[in-house]
Length: 290
Image: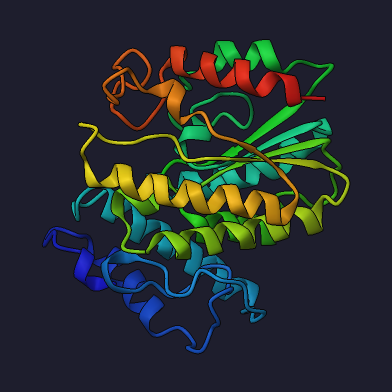
């Protein structure tokens, strides 16, 4: 875990936090709210076992894991702790947003986060006009996407109230791209982790219809090795959707040109959709909404 931290200017309080994580009680199984991280920042064992840890320890682990992920996403450079604490604020705001009695819940990472809606913490959304077209007072929705999230964070949120006490008619899940961009997990491990997320969603919202989103293509050019990993994960997700009896929505081809490249007009950074990209997504998602 510490191998990711290269910046000698990392504040001492962050170092203490990391050290406290290493000293935390050992023996948490793979399905702890925030699993132990393996070499290169990968979660160890993204499958579904039954161990849990005390809530206070889990909260500390989640915050620490966010810090490590944030450092990892910034190439080992120090990122302000505000980015970590705001993630907790967004989680808490998501819990409050359940009071709107959402019919639709979207769960995932920054690609969901940037779609728009409530809660509003984080980067200004690229897809807000599309969100406003899809969702309204007659079709309330909440956005439980969090920038830089990976599967452990999604599992933690699902285990800590994200869907408790609500009965949405549709839940949309897209998670996994950060395991492609910065993780060392093989595709089947990512699929296993997403299976664990689906199991939680089904248990929390047994009457909801679920849409499992395929990962969008990432990176350029078309020969980039991450493209093949996305395809392998999506093959596994297509099979998982059949196994779990959920809807599967793969928009990959719609984000590529004839040469297999990602148009800048659809993804300015070859990862996150632009407004035009969210329009494609919204048009594809709309027929399945209640």
